Amino acid sequence: MPATASPRRIAASLLAVIVAASLLVAGGPPAPALAEPGDEGHNQQLIQNLEAAARGYIDAKTALDVSTKRQAELRIQLAAVEKELGPLRAKVGDFAAASYQSGRLSGFGALLASANPDQFLDRAAMLQEITYQQDQAIGRLTAAEERVKSDKAAVDAEAAKQAKLSADMKARMKVAETAIIKAGGGSATGYLDPDSPAAIPAPRDKNGNWPTERCSVDDPTKTGGCITPRLLHAYNEARKNGYTRFTKCWRTQSWGEHPRGRACDFSSAKGGFAGTATGGDLTYGNKLAAFFIRNASSLGVLYVIWFRKIWFPGLGWRSYSGCCDPSASHTNHVHLSMY
Image (cartoon, rainbow, N blue to C red; front, side, top):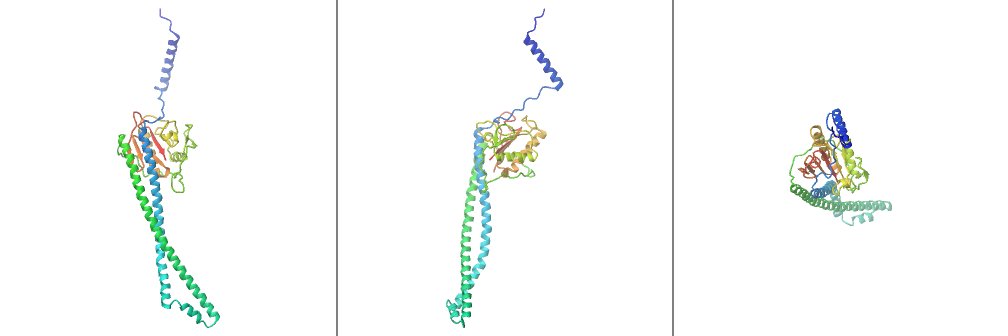
């Protein structure tokens, strides 16, 4: 006679029946949960080095752009003043020649030779006007010559500043390149598209710099955290241009841009972070990465990581990969870090 089954065995048997029935209805086992990237398998020291180098590069590039614009304005101003100098010098020369030919006392002689008081007053007014015009011409000539001297010095100063900034940018790129090579990366072709849509530029300060921003606005990806206004602008510009798939921005982490509200992970799949992207998901990720790079200088992009590659300002794409899964190798999401 068989032994009576225990309640635990009965419950397990019932559960097996329920699971089997659900598989028959659903046509297979349930899909695994789509995990968030976590720390994405980043080399922490590498990322910190890259972030510092990228910020230094962008600061130098911004200052260089401002200096180049200022120099162009100074050159236009200098050309206008130099154009004015010729007629002014000719006019002052005419006054000098007339004064030399007639003699310094000729004006007083003309006054003394006046036939009547009215003629005297007329000649006095004429001499006063001539003297005034001469003084004005000399004053304008002197001021113009001083402006030319000042503008030339300013143009030279901007040129010296640009040389220093260019050297700083090269040094920053060298630091980033060295860090990437030490981490096993190297040069790589990446995702660029000159036909990618243009984004509306993010606000800069009156000097053309990126203003310092705090993590001060609610994260629209519903993490319960916050992001910076500049990241929100980039996020909204991406969505306006059709990149609306699952995204997560803020997250708890001891380092990096996510806890500062300056980074987002844009899933290549529609429903969340899945396996390695293929087909339409891969195309979506390629286009999204190209969009951020096409608009890097107008949005304030620090760097982009996608499909085992990292884009760095000044360097372009370089090979880069975390370890062991699609999130770590960034083959299931585009990582965007902002200045």
